[in-house]
Image 1 (cartoon, helix red, strand yellow):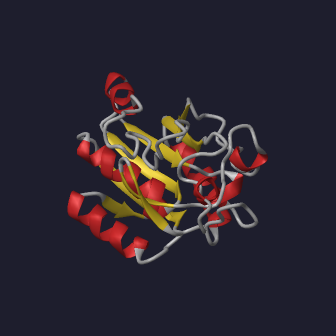
Image 2 (image 1 turned 90 degrees about the horizontal axis):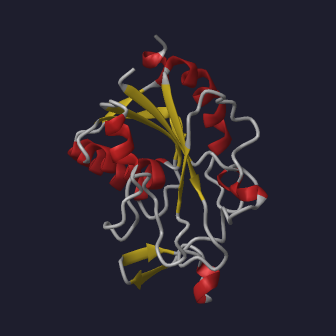
Length: 204
């Protein structure tokens, strides 16, 4: 009862054919569906951007995957994705987690990106997730979803920084891996004390 499965951004725009497709992103769906029944506590996160979001390359008349400096630091510019109310922002059709108890929407402030489920990219604005988990007696957070090197890694790092025992379920994630981002994420996760596991070790 003290563990949470945090299912991160399994949305249409991150699947093959989506606006910001994560290679083989659809492969996580079956793994996560099989995993969810083994957790009493499950939450989903949902990227939820307004049109013209600051992280969109089109907002700045720039090319996707370029970087630029914004008020809160360096930002990778992404193709328009997960725009509020669109099909791309919807959860993947095959995701079947009826026991999920809530959804944390992130990236909905037009001026700030938010990879993490716990804190926005300005590293000041909190989502309130850490406080909610503490009130519910959660001590361990298991992270899965899309993408390993961005929203999953940032969420796992922030969960660990907030004092939770934190795990990344490796086979239930897929990465974008741009500019060495996956290797950087794995190094940061290991340094922070996030434990990498496989889903079959959690089928209990």
